[in-house]
Every structure is written in C-alpha cells, then in structure tokens.
Amino acid sequence: MSKTKYWVMGLAASAAFFTSLEVKEGYSAKPYKDSGGVVTQGIGSTTKPNGQSIKMTDPPITRKTALEWAKAHVAQDEIAFRKSMPGVKLSQVEYDVYLDFTYNFGQANWNQSSMLRNLKAGQYVQACKSLLKWKYVAKRDCSIRSNNCYGVWTRQVERYEKCMGAQ
Image (cartoon, rainbow, N blue to C red; front, top):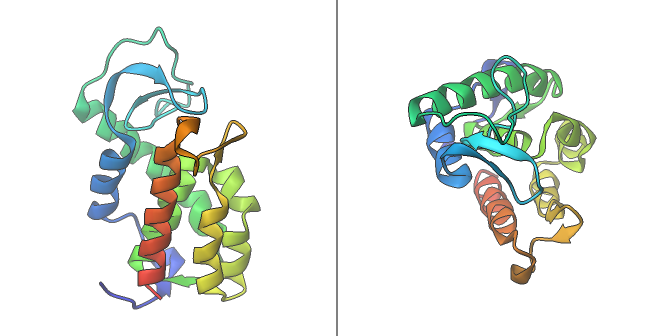
C-alpha cells in the first residue's frame, strides 16, 4: 500500500473504491429503506443521476445501471469533496476512505466533520480517529449490535483501520 500523499485536486476514486463500495453498500434492484429510513436503490443510491429522489414505487434496475448511477453520483460528489480540502495532501487510500465516508454520510456531514478540520490542520492520525465518532444512525448507536445498524459501525472500523494503515 502506497503511503505517498498527493494534492487532493489530482486524485480520483480508484477502481478499488468502486469494488469496495458495492461490497459494503450491496446491490438491490428494487428500492428499499436503509437503516436510517432513507429510500435507497442500486448500490446505495438515494437519488438518480438526474437528481430525483428514489421512490419506493420506482421500477427495479440492473446491476449495470446501479453501477452507472453510483459512478455518476461519486463523480458529482467528488467535485465538492475535492473543493472542501484546498492544499490538503492524501494518499489514494485516505482519499478513498474519506470519499466513501462522504458517499455514505453525505457532503454536508463531511463539511462539518472533525475529520475535515483535522486534515486541513495536517493532523492525519486525528482525522482517522475522528471516523470512529460516526457511529449513529437515526439516533441509534450502531456499535451496539442489537440496534440493527451494526454494519454502519463495522464499516467505520474498517475505514479507520485502512486510514491508520496509510499513516
């Protein structure tokens, strides 16, 4: 694993990012409500590429369409994501970890996060540690297995471990 850091503006989601995204988000042809009650379809998409929200009444989509939607969503997200970190250098692993967080929790949460504040201050280890603060969905502590959102917590722990491995 390369620990070389690059200017964020020069990075993009890696192929490994998309493989991991499908593994973590799963694929669903039909719309469903995620652990936070948000209507979702495909590979964790909450909106279609045209910006329309997914509705429970939407028709099923193929895995190929789901991947196209996810790629379109990530490409759009990456614009604001990169702009949020002027002058920050990250390794590809760190970039993918934080982009995955942003895909999962949203740009607004990323923009308000201590992860972003720590990265801008050059505090990379502290930024990794801040990932572990994000363990709640709909006011449920997902680190408690019986709260029916444990996957959110295990994904955060995996992000943290990858992030720390890049330090």
